[in-house]
Length: 170
Image (cartoon, rainbow, N blue to C red; front, side):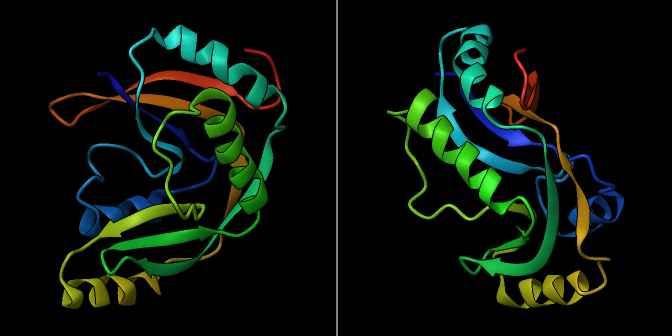
């Protein structure tokens, strides 16, 4: 089964976040900073079929402002930047994708719009990451202009398959 993810790669200067992630996020070298809208799901049809299924959802959602704000620890292991401005739009996209495109996919029970900037299993390392996060110049303010679908390879690499603009037919 081909595993895909739907994400927003926001139009914002993420250089400081990427530097932070290089120290604290094991996936920093695998995928750039992003906001996951639909978590890993199986899709064995062509990417073009997924684009067709996503089109009505994207058409109904115009581009929007985003602000990545407060760093928080999630499930004692992840360090998130919460989405402030744009929270409602990301949540609506998430809900619409699962309702209209992925009705049979496993959904997270509690969706919190965020950008993961770290993952540390040890409490001492997480405290150090949280301390370093205080040096980030927050909020990061930008825009969500499109959604990206990427495919997870068996070797862990990620391949960008689709970049689809918000608010317009692709």
